[in-house]
Length: 94
Length: 478
Image 1 (cartoon, rainbow over the protein chains, first blue to last red):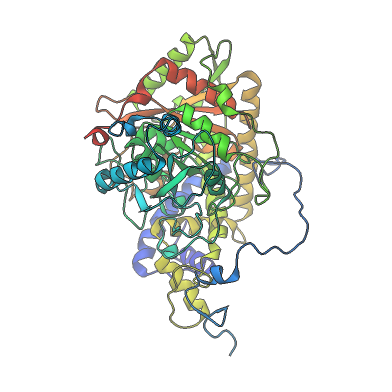
Image 2 (cartoon, rainbow over the protein chains, first blue to last red; image 1 turned 60 degrees about the vertical axis):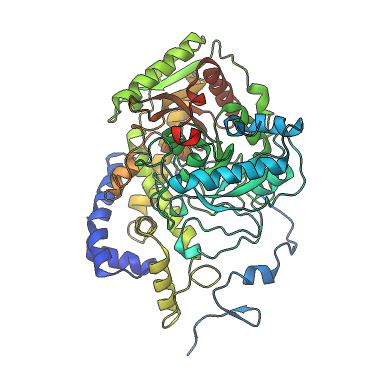
């Protein structure tokens, strides 16, 4: 059962503000979805290994060498706010 | 030559260019003009390029225009995933598939609409508004690669790339009457594909036929240093399997797939498809995939969990939208509130919930274990049969707005496609008939891991015996 409290808790963890109106819509929608996914509780999964990925091939290594194929300036061009070749953010430390 | 150019397959267009019947430039502007003329009614494109960004390259598809889903990075171009939060993002590098297309001399003509971050089955969850189905403008093209599918179905471009996390290539291909191919996980590099569910995502092709499909797969498949989950297996020449011969092969029909609210006309089309394969001397074998009924629930835990984690990067700091009022925490929260659409928020919330302390074991970890059971179902089935045949979707294309208020009913429309992503295997949807209202229907063939070649062989055999793939929506002919 998903209630307003859970939605507020999850929204906080996900760092998303939600309006009262959004809450009203989300609570019944998420409740229905969670009721549906609760279906998995019917199954006995004791002793079954979890599948984390689709492919289980060997580990991939590469030499730990710096490579400059994306220039910093190009990346910074997408920043919503920048100054002196740095990302600009609101003051973090008081 | 020019007037009928849009009716040609991509491979035929390449031949016309090779034999100097038309130039690359003329081809590009022909399709550009078609998009300008027809797409205002369909709205399949997000961005259409003046000039192809491609450089000189060569392949059997050299010179053919191609459209790209708006979640695959093309250097110097706007890539937005149809989301407000990425509205101004300019890709700083080429996805591996884009680099390969350029090396093959293909000409990228533009980016196509999609459900925001590929969350959806209808292309209605887009900040640009919905794309319409060329067969009936009141209906959805499917999703999330609905823009790519609608563009190819309307012959605005010979083919396109899409991405498939739970059916996002195959279901729109089914709704639009074309061929949508999802390769095995690990066949195509995901580098430069904006991540949704990293253990499920796979780039694939959207074409009108299997010849184009095989040629495109030859170009995009293969090992890549930039994707650590990609396979090192050798890539066969897929065009060698364009052979109309399936004599003696075994096709499995899972009994569970014919149980759920299957539309009568879909069922009839599937039965007809089965009889066509029988005529081509394949053996039909009833099989069981016992955990099928748990696939949607498993998927809607795993995919949102991975998505909620992948979407943490959209925080208003490094790129995209920033809503800047107050301190850093408020900046994050407001940016994400304004930037993400409703479905994105729902998925982030479900994922965050399934991963949160106290729920992790009951949801996420349990879903990973059920994923093992679903994977084993397929391993067992493939001991008996070569491929598995199912409908792609339980219904033909539904109406715009029909399912937007009921997210769960939208999720359930993916019921037949989701399992292939959970198991990491390959699958394809191809047109197998039409409803009496002239809506396309799709058949899905699922193959063993890394057995794309069998899907090509079955699909080619089918298209060699039928004409459904040659039907073109009226809007494309006007």
